Length: 556
Image (cartoon, rainbow, N blue to C red; front, side, top):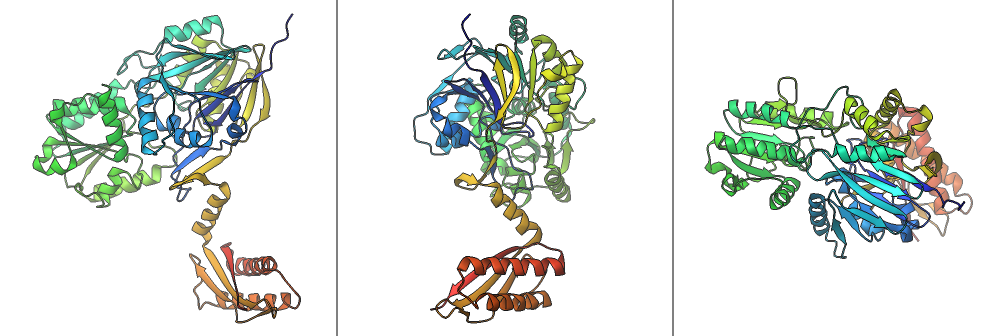
């Protein structure tokens, strides 16, 4: 009997213990493929950060094995990392559904990436062979964006099914979930199922996207003035629902926010959003119509400072401002960590006279794109996997999803709750835990595409909570002595320049430096002494730990 080849490794560089940054890897001895390459949007605890992406170091070190990137759908937490990934490694080909492919092309153009990137569009019936190692096929799922797919990867060691983001919507806006195809894969045998865990805490079924239309209709029927609808720019099915209601009520549609304008433009081009040309106006034309003839579609439902809705509220938009009597609709649920930002935005809107509508029992204004517990049970029953790897969720979601799989028949030791970087090994249809690959966070700050490290973020946290103290020392290195007394500058720290804490800190530094310079010393030793002396004294007097920044001027 011929020996089997080496095991196949399965792991995540992002997407575990978090919502976002989805990047999953399947690796054989010769080949490596990725499923999705997303970003995570930063919480309020990450000052100055625009995006969080995975650490691609392992991929760089194995760049010759990288054969392809497969995209399940066009949301930012699945495609947003592509510009950063392709700057790190050569990805020979990106396979993506039609809409996601269009969004990726625009993203590459927007990021001024000139290198030719091969993007191949796939459909539900395509089968793609990656050498002799992987055979990749697809099944359509229902989600909050059109052209969403799950992926099946057949390897020499067994079959892996990754659901992508989905919900089992039996009355979808768009094509049906190919449950029959998924059932066929299950009947043939699935060794490892990787499934979306985002709503694993919610019992029952996720409501159909069509339910939202009734809540939106009710608002359009009653609103006396302008209607401003804020949602995710990538929630194309939701945008189409709002557009249909707006056109029915003879309201002109104005689209605001860079990402919303881009996505709506692409989706209209490909026929996923249908807005009559006569119904679409730009922001400079809004003043030409009565208030009850206007519907504004914009970004900012998560309270983001730079999004269109926040800029309107903060009087930073060049043509649009909030008017008393405006109805503002938040057609989304808060992402974990964004609640405080949204509350602040809502309060400001109410102060300005707006009537704010959020998703509630009274108004069905949002339907999740992710499966609740009964849908997760259904998928387990249909696929009937030997082993289960919950993905796409915070730790508690992954754990609940694992427990749910056990409820419907899987053994506990066949369920794997992993962290980013933890490796599962598939060998001869059996899955075991393997080693670990580097999978840290990289923080993208402004135009610095290399990102910043966790250490920089920790420094910002210190500056935010405890401030900083700069200590200026002037020395003559030839004579090995201090020229003038040290000067201590506190910033973002409770003490003022003339406080006793600052005066005493200056005295302690002077004494320490004079003692130190009784012998020849290096700049490094002087800086270390300043940090130690000032940090100890300030903590003893204030219980604070500001960042200490020594500055040494050498006068010769």
